[in-house]
Length: 242
Image (cartoon, rainbow, N blue to C red):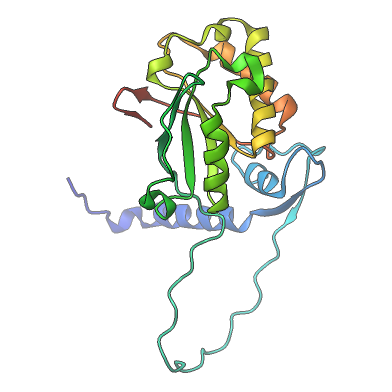
């Protein structure tokens, strides 16, 4: 239920507001000094709380203090002003495009549905068979290669989705750290070759933590942070994942 915040709480509220304003003002301007990371990575991680800002990777300086307040604004200009343009860096998560069951079955379409050409800017091509992944580039379905180019030609970002509910029992290499690390290197090579991100859609049931840590280690040894994208579903089921 709603509770009124009395005047006695005002000093505490003002302290919180002052703290937040000071924190916002303390943002630093950072840039990469090592090719393994990007400026965006440095800005995001060095300004995180707590910060993750290795001096060997990033260099930061305090953000410039704001200049004097501008004078009175001029009167309205004639004609309607344009609406706000979308931020260039903003990404909206898109759908899974189910077009293959590993390399055994393609569900090919002549072209992506019309709505997929306009309603998202990220698409995950589904699904690669995790058991086939260690075999290398031959584990990429042919329809993935062609469809990735189609979406990239429309300016969309593409991920190769590995796994899915139908392949819940085909992650044997995750039980071995060295095999998992090798699989990560294979996935990274695919990411670089086809200019795509990699999505792990693990719905295997058992705890995959140790194997996934080794997989990420292998992946990042080939594709350092900021060069290739790697993601994993936090929850999955036959009706979808999130």
